[in-house]
Figure 1 (cartoon, one colour):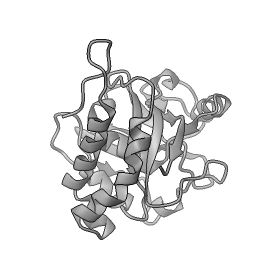
Figure 2: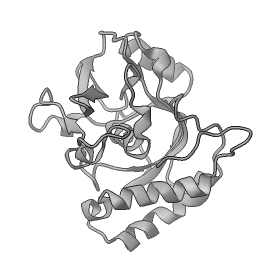
Figure 3: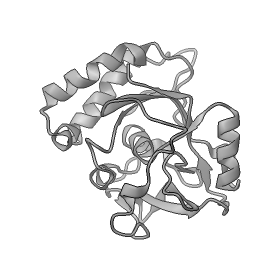
Figure 4: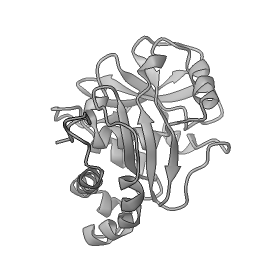
Length: 223
């Protein structure tokens, strides 16, 4: 169960939220994916706790705004293994990778050099927005606007983390592209709902969709 969105009456407990996200990853088998036990995994993420609790900004789950996310890099948790560990809110069917990704193509969707990622297999994504304001906007233009705001588009792994920790964020007509992972062509990865489950697919950077925004974040931190 996710935390209640922050209001004046119910302040968002960042320490409790960090612990919840750790439990979520442990419960979904991320330690075994990374080749460690639950205790070693918890010890590895512990240095991020102070940075997470020091974050500011609202937690508005319905509005798609999250102060921080624990992200496990694909080197420790392959996308093919993490997508089936996602579900929709109150759903049971596992997420999946669309067949439009030809065999081996996910490995070619990497982070552009101008974005960069923190060192290490686990880090924090900060000030996350689902980005439904970009629904109906050409993805290429949405990414330009994100860059102009000094924000960064989410990678595939970060999108998976968002749905893993907050499945409510992936909602009908409020799905999102992941412009932080590219493979050198016009394809932009995206997460949307298909067959009552989360689906990782892609869309052309020049084609707008009324139900597909552009997720972004304020930054990343390794501690």
